[in-house]
Image 1 (cartoon, rainbow, N blue to C red):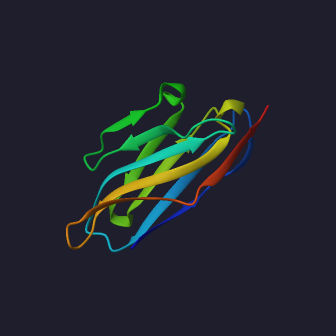
Image 2 (cartoon, rainbow, N blue to C red):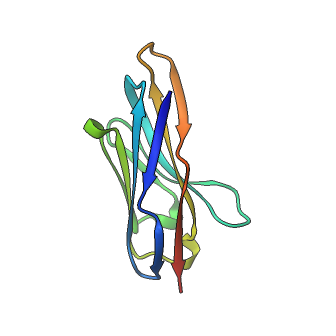
Length: 120
């Protein structure tokens, strides 16, 4: 079993910043891709940013230049630094981790979600 614990969401004014964290624990041999997704009210869940084990990143066009994803492999943790936040960034943010277990079985798991609300 692998668990993800997210933190860092909250309420912020437009133009402000927030930093999300997601720590993975449990039966992990290695972690491949770590990512952040979000689901806004009335919309489908979308990829915000992802990072692989080599540090390569990708971002949704809507957040490029404003959000930065990073990871600490020693802590099995992924971060999302969100700057210049806009009201349209309001959503529940979820982290997702692709990992291999000690038996070399690959799996993927989701965090519980953290609310980010940006006021205008």
